[in-house]
Length: 315
Image 1 (tube, one colour):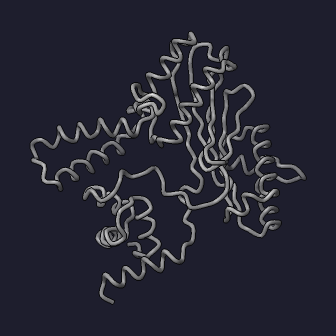
Image 2: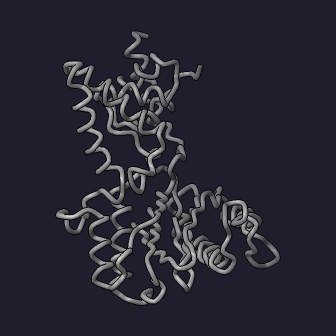
Image 3: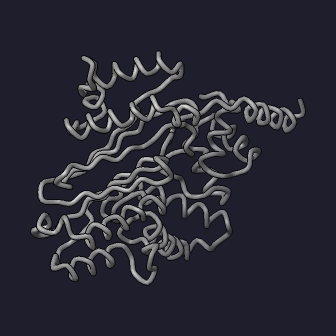
């Protein structure tokens, strides 16, 4: 059983957009279980669909790195405590050197990123410690993602000066013959922009884990049941709602932001036919949003929540 603290109430409100008192009641009802509270709020129609992660609260940048062959791409998230530090020349130089080291050594996971040679006899982990001592603020190379396969094309997009970083991977017959084609690169960039803007959770329906799909079905059934919908028509209502959810959550089924008369799958197929790559398709994507899952200390908000809780309990 977790204590229902102001910070936990804040986290639930950030994830769901529900009111403060509703969040407090939901957490109390499930003894502080955050996931169960999100589910309860959704079933009551008081929350938006659960997001892949919480609202960004940390500062820093997400950097995208592509190999010259464009068959491998990497995202690195470098965090610091304040926006002021991100404008510091020393921090900018550190980010550039980390990106260069990642591009050269092509690490496969976060552990290998931290062990990657940085220069001056240090690896990236050690260089981060040096930076902390230099600027007097905590920092971390926190997350890393990588996409790519020989013969495929990886494109990147970075939004908001490093607030969001995206990689998309496309496959197709003899695709490497077209990797310098501006039209192909622009189309891949458009798909990456789509991922940045529309935040898909999955590539396609077949990529949705069965337990995740079952959870969504259960939420929708309870949601419409709580609205008083007749039990005998619930399966049809839920089936229709799932179709909408697929279009919202699956990249290939999302309406293309630049032309909503087609979805992403159709858009990429059209580009492939035009360029002579009949089997062009998106096979993977990665999206990192700066500070996802990091709780920034916010004493004023915590005090506000505490006051509301006391008010609600009559203390």
